[in-house]
Length: 622
Image (cartoon, rainbow, N blue to C red; front, side, top):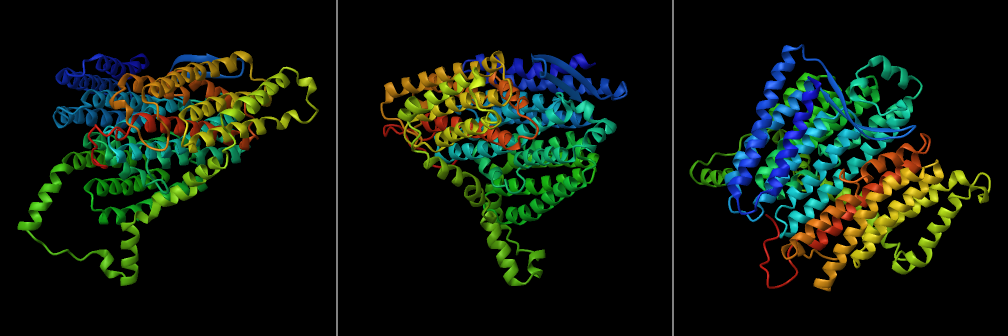
């Protein structure tokens, strides 16, 4: 029975590869490929579930492939199947099947028809990996796929300003959630001294035994899981990204932000529930977060002028209630609520284009006065205050900008000394001197070596912060990201004996992606001369193949699971000691800002309105 689980990963992968090879002009072939892939998946999954139920519905755990193994570390792909997986996979397969049928006609003659179906199948791969994941590492693979497919779907109308801008904004919030997941994985390695599986987490005795003497580490892991879940499910203070994600096509809004992806934060909490079950403070915090989000999102939804924004905030409020149900231990109720909310929001979003015309007609021919509502019973000052705050969405976007993005940009702007000249004449020699000291440790004064990882890690973080705020040279921004990876590797090598083959395993993916990306930037400059990061250039319009190559390089440099760097980053964290929270935070922040900066370079160079005046300039919004 466990061997058959691989089928539910292989079917979407094969369908995706076939779809990629389809000619762009063959709409019928492309749509039928997606339709048959998801249809085959749905039928085979339903048969499997019946077989699973008849055999006593056991919890299935299968360790599939070991990708890397050393004396103290093992990275393996693990799949886990239980009732939570059944609900999420069945709802996901059925709704994706409906959306593929809908999209065949909705996107007819759209210039990005093939691109849309490729991305939907890519998303479906990530969704299945995430839901079937049996450990944090496998889950993080699917998590990353969902993040990049989200960016591509929101920026589907890539010649428009707002879809591209909002795609970067949503991807950036996802990366904040990645900080939580990365740090949870790091702390989990030290707590269990192994790559723990979710199957083992179901053992209450094992969890209690480890948490008894490590209560702080247990609370830290739980809070990091909550951070990742809140960012993914658009809970406070991250709620503002969901309506911005509606800039993508209606089918992608329905499948991604109405039904499936937005509920994966709740899935993460349910999957890890046995771990934080006995931590009362964590349960209270999850419940309060869900309650606050529901109370804030409900009035916001009621005053939105856009139908998609109304649905987005209504969905956020319902997910807040699901968080409360999970915190109270009502797992079955949460699963039923997830399925109901997913089906309802998918339906609402798919009919939303028609609803607008229906409502216009209704207000002319069937006028009804506004009924008395709960808010009318409040004092007028409070009622008007709630109305204005809700109308401005409680300034959630501004709060995130003020607390997170603006400080990062301000710090980056103060690092103007990080230019090409100082990189080659100061930082590279210092890096080489650091390598020299690494192989001649006897020259380092006693007691100093323990503190060396911190300055090297901070230098790497400075470089990626400067890359994030760079507005002029894409080459400089790209070089700073590359240097960040090398400085992180050097910092961890001083921290613990990060062996040469482990460092090579981590850096070989970085090097290959770096060379490919730099070559793409230089070729683009050769053709276009004047390129910078101060605006969107939209060069994918005339350089489609170059755009695709550069995107592949970006994915490699941000440790997407297509290179060894993805495993290498996890390997880096396995060499950070359990008491080095600051070093772990600096490293996680470096990797996260690295990903945001890489996607920003890609978007600025290849997406957005074309900067040449002989191309048609579309409206800002979709």
